[in-house]
Image (cartoon, rainbow, N blue to C red; front, side, top):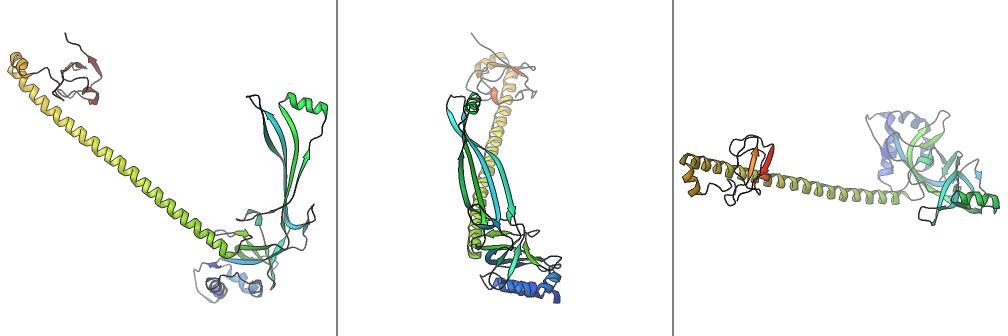
Length: 328
């Protein structure tokens, strides 16, 4: 599978067009001989457009690394972990480990598809690279009385060291997706592109494309789910805001109406107040008022209604304190 990006179309872009046409109309990888035979044109064309190509072949090297179990590889990683029992605060022993050694080696290697070979550079940072476990050995700790006593006093019981050797063996079939470039000595190599995919995987190109399709569908459904959830949150807050505003508008309307009624009652005199029930809350008009607003001193609301107020409904001054009153 080839991905090529064209800015200008001229005679020097013949190779990118050829490789692009081949990649779009074939699910197979690019043969090595096609890159090797067009090395001179590749050197010029790559300065114009980056070319990401797919190569499938067997791993090979002129100077492979000899592993401990007899395998020969091009990438070898060795790790050593110290395993021990640790005394926790609850008084029990739990198993734990700590990394003691991590070492990695890589030699120049290439992919050979039978028509030629192309070198691969920087494979350890590629996506999909899986190394085979060549050997896994557990070395038990020595039974020294002095060392065991010291470890026990520190709350530890040494179990041993676990050594694991992982390798990319020669002869393994791999697929590499990366940028094809030509170095200073004229060697064609595949490396990580400045922008784009870089895969080194035992899977075929069709399997890689299928996996990317699954990931794309997962991202699509996830984005749809987050979008629906976001719309729900926005709608929820909008509805709550509308309900709150409507409640405040209704409360303000009732307060203004009650204030107007209270002013009319005040103008009629104390006898008129007693007859018209002026001791009722100006908001709910049901319960008796029993709260005094500070600093204005007005007493016109009940305890159930004043909790929703920030200003006095009669004089519109800000309420700093509310004093509850009791009647006999």
